[in-house]
Image 1: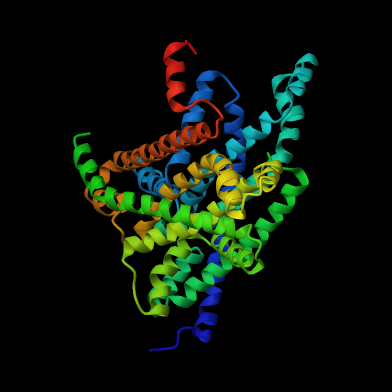
Image 2: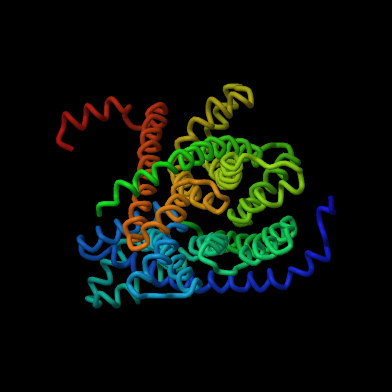
Length: 218
Length: 235
């Protein structure tokens, strides 16, 4: 039997894995942008007319109760039937973005509900238009407090990007898989992949915890 | 729509694997959560360090990586392979147990300090303090976050399709999609619906558990009393 850990092999595959990691980070950043914006939109819509609020709530619950992997497959297989052919990365960003937007909307909602009623009443008394109440009064108070919780979801999303290997994205795990299947050595690629995740997500989670202490949690 | 019956029967063939993975994963998650959660609060420093490494290590790496590592790297290191479904249960349990440990720790720490002091004043032993006073109160707090965690776990069973376990997602993508390609929309809507039903079942179970646990603490009415109240009055 050959040695369990081969350093020269580990160094040989490292550049490819790092390239994959870059794609993982890119998918996370783009997915987060979609999730933050769409999540806020969903949260604000939930405060709107009852019919809309119920529809948004149903959608959010549905997305949160079903696996991201199946949602990825859904977009990947169903969109082409309507003539929409997208790259694996685009499908991934949409799937991650929509999935986490639903989680983010709950976080925003908690932040919005934590804004004291008096703020709404004062804004009404000043007869500010509805849009100004949101942009000038409510959201500036709600958003800073939800930043740590949103940060946690970004970290979760980062760790779920490997699901996109299922539709052929060569992220860090896709690269590890590729290396393993080429050389029939799996210990090094998967161990390195795991360490790379830990290397980024652990400091990030420490950062979020520090933020939590500063702004307080909801 | 006439193939719905076929779709359901193919998905049903994968249901046992999904259920074994979910139930097995939940059982292992509960065991590990309490073991590691209590260890995080243990007086012994080595115990705290080991449990902290477990929690951060498993929460810091991706679940998919852990799965692949267990299935492809570990057999090389130890020289034997695990039965796939039990390997799946192991990964799900280990991963979610790390998240559960923080739930257990947080809930125990949220029990008011006076409860602990009261138990001390009654000269209860450390074990009695924990198991008769602190934990019964902490468990009620744990149930809603554990509900979320178990739903996460149910959703995670879909990644077992990566390692050739024929659970419902794999049944859909490997058997149904190639055969009924024009109907992928129905196939995946049905698959999503199955997951939705399963997660609603978990939520219903956890809600019932929460009612029982809080009634036993004397917070809120017992399930029987609540039923009487809801049929008697117009609430």
